[in-house]
Length: 283
Image (tube, rainbow, N blue to C red; front, side):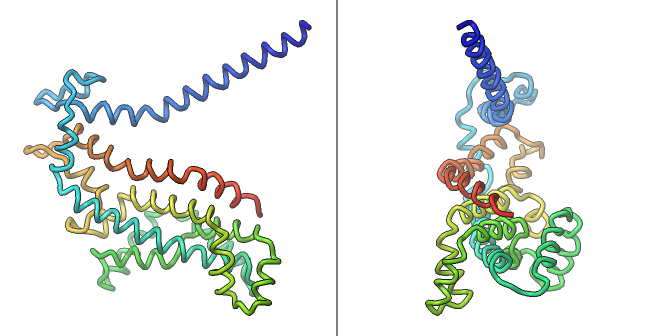
């Protein structure tokens, strides 16, 4: 009996330690969001009191209204949604098509091309941004959303890898049945594989949306003010008449900015987990 009580006691203490660590990690990750929320409710004075007091002395709910009117929030929000919409729709489909080819089609040099594709993941973004800018500038496509169209049509190596892993796990009998029914490879992809890949599509769509929604470097380099996204204006648009940043308004605008991503994550949380699990079970 003493041995059983000792085992139960150790398990209880182990559970307490584990939950304590999980709560501590959760607080560490959520603290920047709490700091942003608290800062958004502060009042900016000429003495800049907001950095020296964690909680606001006087709660300024009006900061949220100011954040929406200080800049043309609606226009820049539409720009961000346009960029994100183009990226999600094109990256999702083009990456699925290429991933299907690597997973199910036969051809000489397929494995070499797949390894070459994965090797591009090791290239830092800043290595390619200058030649990319020169190329699109000579084509006259700078300061337009056509850039995201061409990028979306070219697919993403990481998303192609996810689709390839998922499509490799689909039974071959489905593909053979579609061939017997007279489907070519594209019809098999569109009618059989694509409808079955809802978890993978959800993961890819959310990852692409998050990347396009939070991207700062690309819109900053390739777009002018009229087409700028909300990310740029959050960083540069909230300034006082003297040209100094206004952190309470920046944080209030950032809260509005993060709401779509948070809502999308909680709405598709089940699909995300299922997609990550199913895309990682095949080698």
